[in-house]
Each structure stands twice: as structure tokens, then as C-alpha cells.
Length: 307
Ligand SMILES: *[C@@H]1O[C@H](CO)[C@@H](O)[C@H](O)[C@H]1NC(C)=O
Ligand SMILES: *[C@@H]1O[C@H](CO)[C@@H](O)[C@H](O)[C@H]1NC(C)=O
Ligand SMILES: *[C@@H]1O[C@H](CO)[C@@H](O)[C@H](O)[C@H]1NC(C)=O
Ligand SMILES: *[C@@H]1O[C@H](CO)[C@@H](O)[C@H](O)[C@H]1NC(C)=O
Ligand SMILES: *[C@@H]1O[C@H](CO)[C@@H](O)[C@H](O)[C@H]1NC(C)=O
Ligand SMILES: *[C@@H]1O[C@H](CO)[C@@H](O)[C@H](O)[C@H]1NC(C)=O
Ligand SMILES: *[C@@H]1O[C@H](CO)[C@@H](O)[C@H](O)[C@H]1NC(C)=O
Image (cartoon, rainbow, N blue to C red; front, side):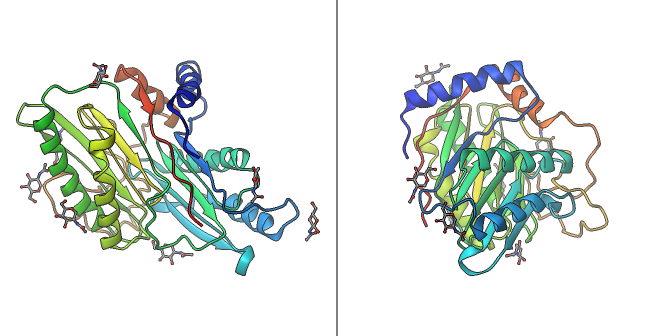
């Protein structure tokens, strides 16, 4: 279901207006309903999916911002993955996933497989096994409408930064594969970036997924001062202005946080407790639009989910 950019513009402009007018609900970046199969309202699959998604956003289950679970058996088994961005605090993470659940069921009322992305979280479900598989489709990208002047210097520093961050994120454990950091270009611009994989991926799967994703930069984002690519299994984002919360982790549980920060010159996943002050998730969404003084635009259609 590739969408023309004009249709996307129609779709995006009310969204931008709403970002200014309401800061109550976060807005989805994109969603896809798979054409692979439908369920009926009296089916066992629906019952299983409802049960699974209802239990999904419970605070205890979503620790570390990652949730993967199944309910039911055989062909009626529902499988779901939720992933919060690594710097999203637990409260915002839970709220994002709960909202994603509602919105995705509205958007895809009878599809067995569907996915939705927000700034703060991603939610997907399927009747097939989706755990431990690296999936790079469907994907989409967004870019910052502002341009940079020293394109070559910027691209060079960006590539080095993303390569380093990929190395760090892919070395994460089965709870969190996330890294962020900054780099200064030879022309003195600073680049801020983050990369993240679903932590059920192996180290190699994560680094391959990121590699494939980073290779889309020339198509989507070169020359722009910000860009992002989202796939079901991994994602990255970079900007000239800081857009992440360096002090936050997705699920600060000091007693359980045994993971050692991976070595590396760029900031890796912090394990310290997050401060309690927070800008709301939707507030942060609109901050991006307002403080960066620009608009992000979604320009690429999506490949159908493969089943
Ligand atoms: C599934 O349902 C959608 C509408 O929700 C419909 O457009 C589509 O054709 C259906 N697919 C199949 C295979 O029945
Ligand atoms: C579910 O409802 C459909 C009609 O909507 C019916 O054909 C089917 O037999 C029902 N299935 C079950 C398991 O009740
Ligand atoms: C950025 O560059 C693109 C393509 O080179 C151009 O179409 C666009 O107008 C530029 N944007 C700004 C804000 O200068
Ligand atoms: C990447 O890491 C290497 C060594 O690990 C370091 O020398 C380099 O400065 C880092 N580059 C960036 C952009 O972080
Ligand atoms: C969820 O992912 C973790 C690894 O991140 C894995 O240990 C666990 O078995 C997975 N759960 C399911 C139901 O596959
Ligand atoms: C990722 O890409 C870099 C450079 O493009 C390459 O050196 C590295 O081996 C790749 N990693 C994987 C796992 O393919
Ligand atoms: C860039 O990252 C380093 C950690 O590698 C951190 O100490 C520094 O404060 C960051 N710079 C900015 C401007 O955020």
C-alpha cells in the first residue's frame, strides 16, 4: 500500500495543526495493517489478541521498555512486541503502549497482523512467530526539512557516529539494545543520534538490521539536518539539536539494573535511576515541531507486511 506524497501531505497537515492545538494525545508516526489475513469478531484469535494486548501495558511487564508475549495456541496464537525508545521513562512508555493499542485496533479492526510507530514506542502483533526475527519491512523514513551546508563533513561524521552507536547498541543485553551519542563535524556542527533494536535480536541481527537501515540515508536524508528510519526490528534518528533525554532510561529499576554500560567513547545506555521531572510524551512531540522550528514530513510509502 504505497501512498502518494500528496495523500501523505493531506494526512500530515491536520496532524501538525493538532500538534499545536492539543498536547493531550501523542500522534502516531505511521501504521500498517497487514493484508495477510483477517479475523472475525467471534474468532478465538480475536479473544487471544484482546487478552494479550490488554495485559501488555501493565507496568511490571514492560520493564526496560520491551515487551514480548504470546497468548493462545497454534493458528489462534497471538504474538505481540512493544518497544519504547530507550530514553522513554516508564510512565510515558506505558502510556504510549496503551494508547498505541487503542489506536492500532481502531485502525486495523480485523487484521491479524499490524504495526504502529510513535516517537516514544512501537507496537506490533501477528498470528505468526515474530520473536527473534529481524524484520526490515515495512519501513518508513522522515527527515527534517532544514538543510545543512557542509554536507560531506556532516555525512562523514554522521556515518562514524551511527557506526559507533550500532556497535554499542548491538552489544546490549536481551532487555535493551539502545545507544545514543553526539559527534562534532569538522565544520563544528554537532550531531545527536540514537539507534535501537528490539532486544530479542542477536548482536549480529541487530548490527545487520542497523546496517541495512543506515544504508537508506542517501535516499532519505542526506543534506538534511535530521533524519530517521523506522523498521519493525530497528530504528535510528539523528538531529543537529538534541532530541533525546540523556538522563533517562526506559525502565530505571536500580536493583535490577545489572547490565554494565558497554565501553565506547559515545554515550551508552545509562543505568542510573532517571530523574522524576519529565516533559509529557505528547509535549515532547510538539516540542520537536516547535523548538526545531521546522516540520518533519513523511515521504515514503510502505511495503506490505510479509506473511
Ligand atoms: C480484510 O479486511 C479488509 C477490511 O478491513 C478488507 O479490505 C480486505 O479485503 C480483507 N482481506 C481479506 C483477505 O479478506
Ligand atoms: C463466526 O461468525 C461467522 C459469521 O460472521 C460465522 O460464519 C462463523 O460460523 C462463526 N464462527 C464461530 C466459531 O462461531
Ligand atoms: C533543502 O534542500 C532541498 C533539496 O535540495 C530543497 O528542496 C529545500 O527547499 C531546502 N530546504 C530549505 C529549508 O532550504
Ligand atoms: C567512534 O569510535 C572510535 C573508537 O572506538 C573513536 O575513535 C571515534 O572518535 C568514534 N567516533 C564517533 C563519531 O563517535
Ligand atoms: C522475549 O524476549 C526475550 C529476549 O529479549 C526472550 O528471552 C524471551 O524468551 C522472549 N519471550 C517470548 C515469549 O518469546
Ligand atoms: C556494517 O557496515 C560496516 C560498514 O559499512 C561494515 O564494516 C560492517 O562489517 C557491517 N556490519 C555487519 C554486521 O554487516
Ligand atoms: C556529547 O556526548 C558526551 C559523552 O560522550 C557528553 O559528555 C557531552 O556532554 C555531549 N555533548 C553535548 C553537547 O550534549
